[in-house]
Length: 116
Image 1: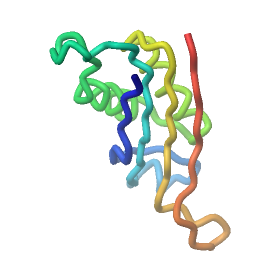
Image 2: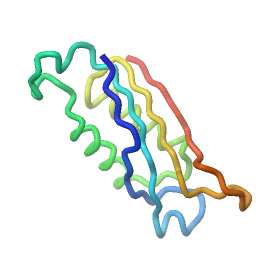
Image 3: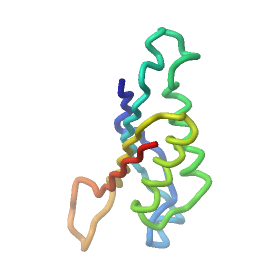
Image 4: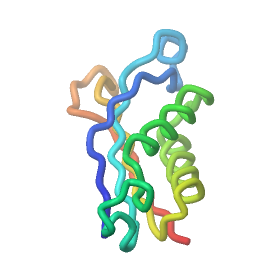
């Protein structure tokens, strides 16, 4: 069974530019977790609680500044893999307000997968 959370929006102070780190900006996290049969019992105690997944991402994002999405995404993936003891995780971090070279793009993103 795969649990998915799409578009978890959190404010972060990540980026290469000083104003990104100072002022912050929104980041969108898409998460997939291979949880096996956890939760099939219909008991939250047996499941991976989505609320706790979001809390873990928020704690990492609030507690550490990253220059690059290429560092943020694997840090989130490693944390979720360890904290929730899942077999596999995929994390995509999107930065929707980026304007590379002055161009308008929908978003920039980095996706990473981790397995036990």
